[in-house]
Image 1 (cartoon, rainbow, N blue to C red):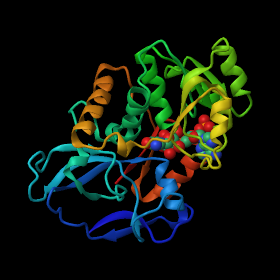
Image 2: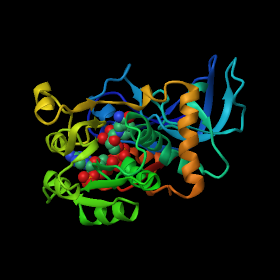
Image 3: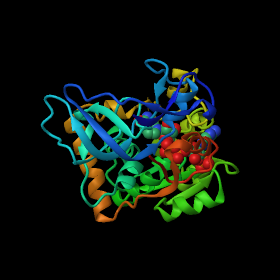
Amino acid sequence: MAKRIQFSTHGGPEVLAYVDYTPAEPGPGEVRVRNRAVGLNFIEIYVRSGLYPVPALPSGVGTEGAGEVESVGPGVSRFKPGDRVAYATGPLGAYAELHVLPADKLVLLPDTISFEQAAAVMLKGLTTQYLLRQTYRLQGGETVLFHAAAGGVGSLACQWARALGVQLIGTVGSAAKAEQARALGAWEVIDYSREDVAARVLALTDGRKCPVVYDSVGKDTWETSLDCVAPRGLLVSFGNASGPVTGVSLGTLSQKGSLYVTRPTLAHYAASAEQLQAMADELFGLIASGAIQVQIGQRYALADAGRAQQALAGRQTTGSTVLLP
Ligand SMILES: NC(=O)c1ccc[n+]([C@@H]2O[C@H](COP(=O)([O-])OP(=O)(O)OC[C@H]3O[C@@H](n4cnc5c(N)ncnc54)[C@H](OP(=O)(O)O)[C@@H]3O)[C@@H](O)[C@H]2O)c1
């Protein structure tokens, strides 16, 4: 027997139950991992609330964690019991002491990166990798807008942009978060709870706006984001923290400057074991060099996952949050 978090009906954090369960044995091509730290991500709030569908109920929660390989199924040669591993794109169920997932979802963890650090950066760091290096390949010298810059993904984006020589304008919801984003490398910070974001971006870019805008806030920032993209630039809408964007008018994209829009998700970038490893290598390299320092703002016991999600949804967290089994 082991412990995990599961939910049997969609709803608020109170539907998350900490239960005993019998973990599956790893099947062909699968690995069973004893989690030492689990990552908390906004996507788990969408899953719990019902915004994103789950295959079946009751359902596990979470796709990110780090720990030791406990056992491997038939046909697995890349991993052996005792290996230190991490994952970000596994099947639902990472909020657990033991998690079974396909071997091609795992990466080996360098000794220099702790389990907590890995659980804090795998999903958010790989997301930052594809956003800054693949969805739009930043080279250095660009000025970009990145919403929620003091959050989990945002804290990594500030540092990664600085390492690339990119001027990142970050938005945040409070003065304390503004200070944090600036300390992590944001070039300029806008408090979107009290400032006119589009006007500030126009002024900061001498009227040119940004070649790329990264928006994970969704409903509340969508219109503003469109006003911050330079003609023929790209709006990357990658989340819905304030609610999903609906009713998009294609004509608006033409009027605002022949804009491009994409709605990407990590699974399509880390689609193979090779892609996953290459993205992780770039992330781990930046951590090893000191260019990125892992920001663990909060730690909770796994049993308190509901309280942790409540803090994340309530905008009370900064950096990453880890759950400890
Ligand atoms: N598509 C992908 O591949 C992918 C992968 C990972 C994450 N994401 C998305 O990236 C975003 C960041 O994820 P994260 O886990 O690192 O979370 P996070 O940024 O640590 O937390 C979300 C932040 O969004 C801001 N926010 C603005 N309006 C909000 C509202 N109405 N309710 C709650 N928060 C609001 C808050 O910062 P302020 O207080 O500063 O406003 C809050 O701290 C999420 O939208 C997530 O879904 C997408």
